Length: 400
Image 1: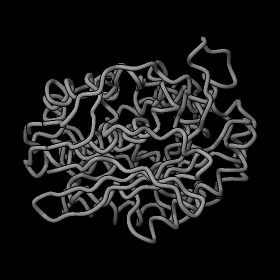
Image 2: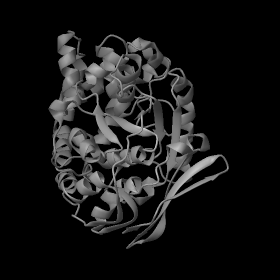
Image 3: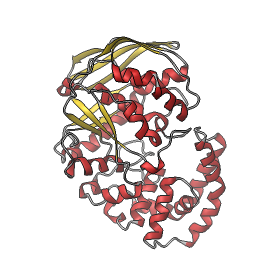
Image 4: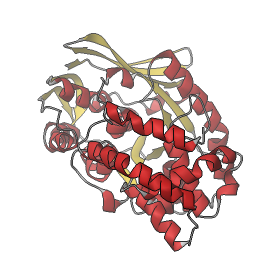
């Protein structure tokens, strides 16, 4: 794989960073675009495309030749220990050699501090600690980002813009710039490299893209430190506390933020922020902006809010009736699971003496064998096998 020297362009109110890419399957352009008013944040280094394309290159088993300058620390880490970590997470990847035309010397780190803002539990928790609270100097947020590193094609770009617009009013309440960064990063990820498995690296590439103005990138943790591991997985987030330092440079400090909290603790912390009562967006199932209230992420959040006694605060952003129709079956699913995020909810329920409906015990035994099969597949780092589609059909049948 060859990554060309980056070009920085401005036209039609947009600033664009792009690099030509050649690989065994063809050639194309990797690009990132943002409003021209934020164009001064763009770096002229090749760090961003190298970070974005390392996993696809390892998946294809292609060495990488970079024609632009690469930060010395990043070049060292990505050519060495970082690939070993990636192969522990995704054993099907192959080690590749990275060559760069120029190694960029360390320069002064920019003063900007950014985080991705999706309106979800993790990102609101980062806001609570690094904007609403009093963090140390150098850790107080100066920018919020909303990046498209997961959506493909025209439909994906439309969804990206719809979700950005739905969050913009709420982000404005912080007084911080809310920077939309569109890209075609997802086009370079083949089947088997889904967003859940690779999202950290995709999104950190945006931090490197903006390192002319952003010197610290706070990446919201998905799991508590107690659950961190480096072994085959279905979610790269399990290893963020390990991978982010290896993705840092002298110019960009990528930091895992929020790992000191469990997901339950985050959710209840966020529920004390009134702004979230009309802005919380966690959905993994909606085809547009907002929450469907019935996908796995919506149900997990709603059950936590329910057990925590604060569910009604979120009537403006969730369909609580739809949740309540599915609650008993979903409780059975959670109580039969060994997923660490589900076990946290069970523990909270015991602490709060939450009354579990009798029918949920029946659902629990129906779910138990399918949950075990599902967990076995995920521990091996694979997507759910086709035969586990039965679990989805059962979920729909039980949930009504």
